Amino acid sequence: MTKKIMTNEIIPKKIMIVDDDSSITRYLDALFTDNGYLTCIANDGKDAMDVFQAEQPDLITLDLEMPEEWGPRFFRKVSKTKGFSTPVIVISGLSGRKHSIPKARAFFAKPFDTDELITAVKDILTG
Image 1 (tube, helix red, strand yellow):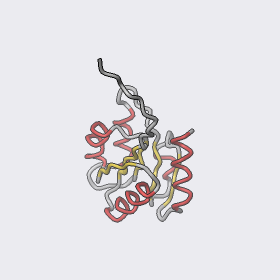
Image 2 (cartoon, rainbow, N blue to C red):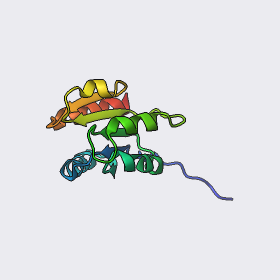
Image 3 (cartoon, rainbow, N blue to C red):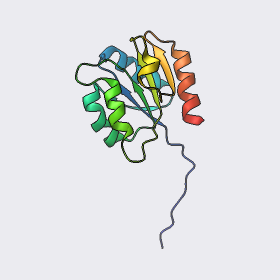
Image 4 (cartoon, rainbow, N blue to C red):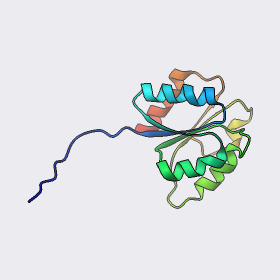
């Protein structure tokens, strides 16, 4: 007879970073990892759908302007996925970012305040 042992191990939340700027993705990756999160990265909206389906993140940070496919187009596609409820934080240098993805949970302009971003991430993932 085999017993299953239940553990109280907390599985870290996973954040998907979607941005074409490698300096931003490296920075966000380090920031989120240092704060106890797992990460996965898509370098543009075109690759983002494959990464989303493979990784099933708990939260998405999304740039708006990318060369292959813009963030709003990716969001429209991913939000049509059956059962989609993943919160999104927009991080962009574009003005009008608040109007691009109305269902986003938070909006940050580049450059952004890291403490405010981490606070928003924690609030969204624990709320």
